[in-house]
Image 1 (cartoon, one colour):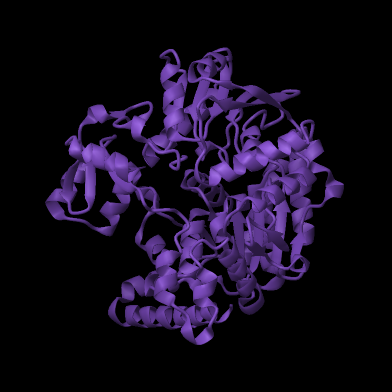
Image 2 (cartoon, helix red, strand yellow):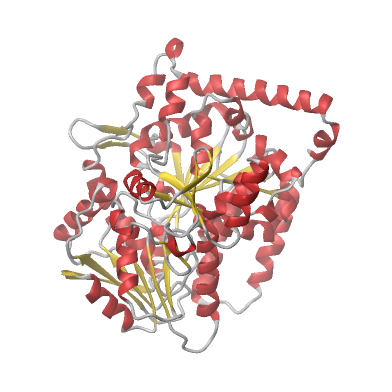
Length: 571
């Protein structure tokens, strides 16, 4: 199972050396820009100064616990390199704590860089900003599809080619699809993973349908290439050991003896960080009933499973500047602006109303703090993530998260398995402590039993025979995100001027990246409906633009054809 990763690693070394030698000969200016960065030791000094600034401030109960977790991370960073788990309830400061562990682990074991892989672009820029504050923008490289134009310069572009920087912030898609790629441009960076530290943030978000090849890759990079992995989450999935799936399916995870836990039960974090009561409503509610409940609170967050449901509930609220909608019907720039305004109003003293209806995009890593949260029934991991947006800073004695069922909702895809596993757990233990790590483990065991496959694209079969590894086929099949939908550019902010430039001068890497700030993905069925209705312009072959400004709402995003949204498009 390891040979195909070894071959790609050798290929990576060859490709990058060839690119760099050619660059040195043909483009000395760019070659000189690949200057040295701060050392890991220097980065540790910066990190210590950053943490020291906050330790002198008035400590709350939550902040004292965050400091305790950071101290534990520093102590256990001396452990032998390998695979590690950091399990901390939401609001426990996992991001900074994981970096504390990674930097100290890198210093003690001579690791060359730290790579933070994040599942959602909605939180990657937030994390990158925190890291720039700690380590300086010159030492932090972002590599993802929605980088803002101001963060791109020639030096960052060069570093993103081969991840030649001490701190790299990227996505799970970039990381794992590169590990299974056959293209020089993607494989080029793989040798930078050797003798490095990789943080997998929000590890519960790893797709179950790819868990087996992902686990195999983690094991290989750890044993063969000296990479240390940290799986960081509030709801740690069962990545170790052998687990029974649906029918004859099995998940052969990482050997449990090879995984080291940084925090343990003796710290009792789930109890000490308890700030929320979770209450289950056994009745099925209509959109109107949910809207009325939301309007009964001055500050409230409602999270639902699909974009169509979010649009429906939001549309039933009485019109107000205090109401906000968040879903992937909004383009990335619009989402960031909306989140910024929500945070501003939440921080703006007084008792100003803030009511938000959102999809799961706000659940993991988005720093919002509401006294009341409503969450549509989902898997336990999602419910706990939603609860993490409730009384996040512990300013109230207790917040409340209400879990409701939606009338007429029929779950589809992977979310169906999660909901059914949660419903089964609720029937078995109606009075369970849902924050208890043992209950979370039982949930995952039930979920895995309902999982039809842990290797949906048969990646392991295609790579198991050393002399017959099908590299091209593996690269084609290994896609963490289902790309069966269509991407549209919407008419928001200055998207129109970018489209005009595209028509005038043609595509470029920089221009296409800028246009990425104004894109929305829709189902193929919705795309065809919009095209037949004449709603789409095609300024360049394969690039579709929703030119009519009336089809993009400044509050809720793309309006056309919401009724056609399929439930598989969950965020």
